[in-house]
Image (tube, rainbow, N blue to C red; front, top):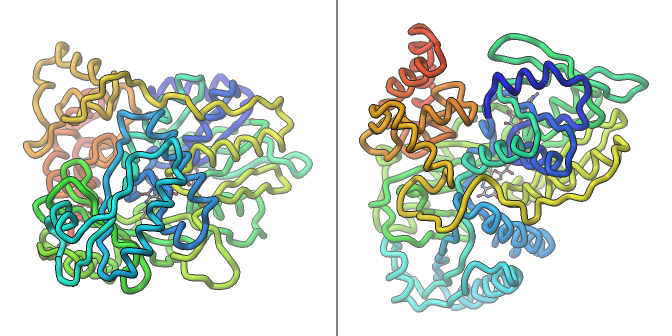
Length: 518
Ligand SMILES: Cc1cc2nc3c(=O)[nH]c(=O)nc-3n(C[C@H](O)[C@H](O)[C@H](O)COP(=O)(O)OP(=O)(O)OC[C@H]3O[C@@H](n4cnc5c(N)ncnc54)[C@H](O)[C@@H]3O)c2cc1C
């Protein structure tokens, strides 16, 4: 993927079949779906791909044990089916993860073992492993950091895990492989209409400060928590449909949560779920569910959310953590579908909704990462129907995402690149200094940065440290320390000047400081 080539494509295309606004899970999934069906597809993203909610998940590919407890069997079955498909279609960036749910009474043991057995049965042929009822001793063995007072046992079950931004990049590059054009740092700023129907979208290339008027037969609005802003760009009188809910995660060293199993507490005091999940050699602890009105691309964790996670982690684990032990804190906004009755956001459905405006704009909201493929299928089907484009069936159910081949070695970090890993390592023949690491605590070498610039449309230091690698999310201090090296490499490769480099380092440091708990 190369941004200059993408810009040339929008300059030389007079009419698109489908334009997708928003480059998160839903938009990228839609771009891939439409491109594979053979439609002339363009996706635009105002920031970097997955800068929004899609980089800030708990990293689970899951059916949603919680939704089972809420009685939403249909959603669970659909998500379990999609979980199985994603693990099969992108095995290099997904894996099965064992979870242990500790129980503290006989009733809990009965209730959760029935539920989790059912969860396993509902996944059918796509099951990731057998659900097991555990004694107290076995639970202690599988979760060595768990407090054992009042412990009665546990239940072990399996769900999926992934790297959300690496999947985003693979979705984008696979869409491009099938003929799509994808552009980061391009914002939709207005629509043009004829007889009440949208005929074109005005976009602004934020890096070159140039506007384009792009014609298309169909338009999908996949902008997550920004959905209402785009809908209101089409029709200023439309009322809000999205109810944003913030969730935060703290990332801590794995010495505070020993072993390879994840912890799942299905119901904390205030009815939330608490996870502690091993991820990229650290532990991700989350999450919260806080209704929020201030919509931002860079949401901030609230003090009470941080306190909540630390207190609850310490309540369940024998390895007390303090603020100073947190290596990174990140917050994301769930684009939940609003209901008129003032329900708590934790009770709002995680199902997705499609709204078709009179103008032909198809907006898709809600859902989750796990179900992005099905959401994309539904969004594209609706867009085809509305625009009267000739219908072609969706074919992403078994489509491989990214470039990968068996065997996949997950003992080092290279597996996330699939078979491109070989090409990245080969870059060191061009310059053997690119064999050097960018930070002593992380395995990434300089050649990876060159690859991101040349092939993954990384435009800023943040793109590299937050989303092409995950260093910002794993260890914000290390990310700050790595930023001058990354900026220097990018400056040379992108033919920028010293002023650009300094500005990049400065703005990255300002951003990364928000991921540190002072
Ligand atoms: C705390 C938390 C934990 C979660 N954990 C999980 C999990 O473990 N597993 C799971 O399956 N799901 C999880 N989810 C849900 C999942 O992350 C989201 O459902 C999903 O990422 C939403 O993707 P999206 O594409 O709809 O939105 P986004 O990722 O927000 O993408 C929308 C994009 O549109 C862009 N945009 C907005 N306006 C414009 C414009 N005018 N022009 C161009 N672009 C624009 C934005 O910049 C943004 O990048 C979690 C969510 C949260 C908040």
